[in-house]
View 1 (cartoon, protein in one colour):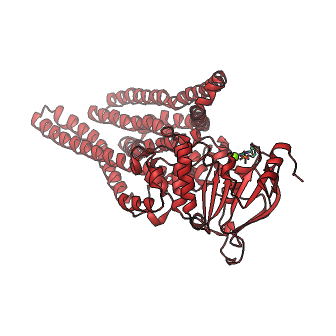
View 2 (cartoon, rainbow, N blue to C red):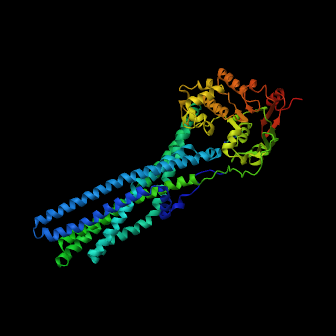
View 3 (cartoon, rainbow, N blue to C red):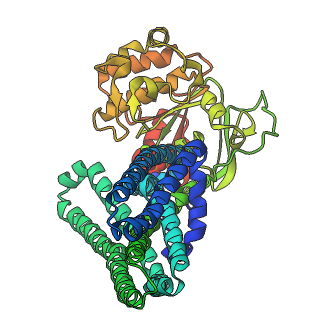
Length: 587
Ligand SMILES: Nc1ncnc2c1ncn2[C@@H]1O[C@H](COP(=O)(O)OP(=O)(O)O)[C@@H](O)[C@H]1O
Ligand SMILES: [Mg+2]
């Protein structure tokens, strides 16, 4: 199970801009009409820029030279009208592309977020939240900028360059060829340095993600950092990431701006050549002043967009680098597959059975080794053992947060991998030591993934909570169902988080309820409430309880001692205590 990101090396998108653009296009799916509007307006505004030089040349040669000011005025009005049309067109185009960009961004962020939600817990163990947030925010924003501005500039400029280039050659082939010479040279130079620019922009995004990850980590652990006086350690780590980001972005800045002056230079050369050669041609009577003015304007319409293209180009490179990092996330496949549903549910089978199960985390030794046991309906099981013994890991396996590395787990006689997440949720409810919460409200969190109550109004939901004696717990939240929750969970206490997880689990009416230190952070009054609620659960509910406080496990039907890869049936509470205290079984 490797979900580690950043495994794609930066070489992979080297020089493959065309392939990259092809991957950008599908993102605009469903934007056909808007794109067509934007495309048309851009053609109109480019066409207006291409028509005006000819009109100016004509006006100069025919009317100004003959001092016919009526003609000059008439053509000026025509020019004015054309400029207005061009202006209107580019205005509409900007608005349309802006909204396309925002929608693409919205869809993309949604897609990534959904992807993240379907990835297994192991993924989040292996990647820093900050880097992921950076991928969702920064990288997608690079794409947005590209769609909102760069793409149509790209199309419009390409059109202008082509049109102006053709007109230059048609008006005067030799002068045209001379005017285009600097452009040919500069394109060659671009070809040579592009791969380097690509590489640098990818590195810069990577460094930004790294820094974001560092910030996230130290914010999450801030209390711990202060308590253990590790401020220096994290400051150094952050400094390092910040330095790296700084250097990478400076180089990326240089890289993306290197083209602008180069293209400016080419434009100046083009102008100079046309001016010198043009004046010579006029002196020999082969050219007119009006045509020279028109020619210079075309040189301008050729080189200016070329220079802008260079900027657009680097925006494109950034967008492609962003897309690359996003695709990395989207390409991840959860290896927690759902097996085809061929095995039947066996009514007489134990509710849950571990068959020779071993499990290890990607970079740990075996946490449990070759374990087999069964959980029967309606029984209460307690897991005890030292901290780090593997209780939480065992509970996570029961809830299929991870798959065993060896052996199988059967739920009602069928491989637990044969159930969809939704089906599994109907059988198993769990409250983990560190509950998962989502940004939203208490309401959204307690009915998460529970289709049954999705359409309930708050009043109906309150009624259900009352039936199940859960109203007392809800009272622990200031604004009841509408109390806001943030996924980082800073606004509520760990105890409150566990209450939410508790209500969520009870509402599912699971057949197997797993409580991992569920009352560790909860006051004794609330704990009594919880116990009353557990009492009221149907007698057929199987409970697995992991607890420090002994009173909670006194009434267990069976006690398992979990330590050092082994899970031993301890039988009595006294036996379990002896194992815990002396590491041996009482005789
Ligand atoms: N996500 C993880 N990645 C790697 N090792 C882990 C992870 N979670 C727990 N462990 C390790 O697994 C062992 C058992 O941990 P855990 O199941 O949390 O024990 P308990 O709940 O009994 O305190 C510990 O050595 C712990 O360091
Ligand atoms: Mg634990």
